[in-house]
Image (cartoon, rainbow, N blue to C red):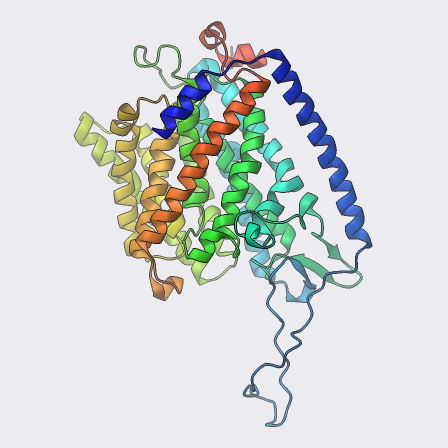
Length: 499
């Protein structure tokens, strides 16, 4: 009912010129303010004394001297754990962990460029392939700059007081403080990952923000204006993605404090993107000819290549979320591959039974469903459990992309909700069932997982609707019928694919 109410509200909106110009002026003023704030922040930081980590001032409890020290030898006090980003000696950085995290960052970016671009581009009609790819590239660029300006600080600093449970602070605006000081051999680290430079950690998390925004694009392809896409995705990254990432992954976030488990983005990435995509599909309405014309994919070979890049890149996505080159990263890599394989076969079997034959598109969609489902659990479950995740997700997401899609009557063009939304929900709930205390160090709770998933769904639903409305005050969300008929490649970019 809430979705229907939002859709009716959006459809009833007029777009007066005065409101559009007022909003554009407000956005321009905001950008100027941000730029001024960034310069002021960086200048202020340059004048401050280094925020180095100092040893604990309180004496620890008596300790047994390590081998090689006499009974009366003094035992060094351990360094105080970080509660905020700070600086440490460069010699405390783990080289192997840093190398793995830089590799993982590249792998996750590969999932979007060119993974998502090929995966989505192959599934749309020929006349809109370039538009989809342009949207993915542009989203990658705009999310990157916003992450540098405000997103990272909102998501991954503790914040202050009660507000800090919902949104981070300002200490890392414009990447302020992400230092490497050669003379004193000091380097900035995050309190979440003190074993690697914060510059690497912030870039790793940036790639997650990029792919989440790129996933949403699949719900409204072939009908949303390019300018509207840029405005909406910019607002959505800062106002929806960054706060949810803070709730779940920053230790001071309210879902993290509650004990919600999300190892690599089941709720932050997939449920969030799936619900946002569903709202977008409702708000823009179905494509011209939807349900009466055959929408033949341009090239499923491109889709398969994109799916392969997603599968390989997902090792960085999940195993990289261990933030170390250790046993948990190795386990996360193993369960990721097993779940993807089970998901591909599960979807294939369901489609074979329902339609009498398997398809390449089904196999590609199934492996993605398995990858999505194992994402929140990758560092918490055994390889045997990963098979269950993949098998359940393959069937559930097949239903999500077929039966549930018809029931919802939404033209979610590339099944963002059916695969990522449903797969994320399945994976989050199964994490509460299968999380092993031996592996995770904590007990899983289906109730807490449900609260976490439901909270992300509700926030993403409401805020996505609101941001679509704000975007509609600047530009029309949807292209006209002639543009849709000609294709967005020509109408939005004056380009054509091939001869």
